[in-house]
Figure: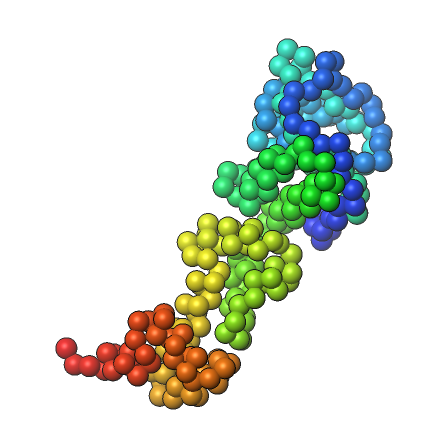
Length: 250
C-alpha cells in the first residue's frame, strides 16, 4: 500500500462522529472497503489473526480491505470516534495506526474533517479524507513537511511574481494549508519569505556594483521603475539612497 505513500480517494461515505451504537462489534469481517477512524475516547480493539490492538485516543486508524479482522469495544467504556467509510487506490492492505501530533498539519486536517463530518457533499468529504491521507504519507515516510517543500519551491523560483495557485497545484496542497504550515514553521507567510529572498538577492547584486536596470532585468521585473518601487516598499528607501546609507561614514 505505502510503496510511494500515495493513496487516491475513490469514494468516501457514511461519515459520523460520536458514541457507537448499542452492542457495537464487527466480529471476523472481510469487506471491500476501509474505515478511517479517529479515536476521541473510550475503550476499543482491533483484532487480526489472534493479535489484539487497543484503539488509542488521539490516533488515526485505517482498517484493511478484504482481510479478516474484528472490531470490538468495552460496553462499559464505549468508544467515541470519528469515522468514514472509504475506498482508495491502491486499496488499504494492512491495519495502520498513526499518531496525530498536536499542532501538526495532520492535526489540522483531522480537525477540518471532524468539523465537517456530517456534510452530505461526498466531494467535500472525499477532499478532506484525501488531505488526511496526504498528511499520513508525510508522517509515515518521515519526509519533508509541507512547509519545507514550500520553502524549497520558493528557493528555486527564478522570477519575481509568486503565484500561490500554481504553487498549490505543484505541491498538491491547498494554498490555505501551505500558508498555515509555512507560518507555523517559519513565522512568516510564503509571500513574505519570497519577497525577503528576492529583495536580499537584489541588494547583494547592487552592492556588487550592478546597476538598477541590470538588476531589474536579471530578476525579470517589468522595468527599472517597477524594481525600484518594490525595493523602496521593502527597504523604505530607493536603491540609490539605500546604497548611500551603507557607504556613509559614521
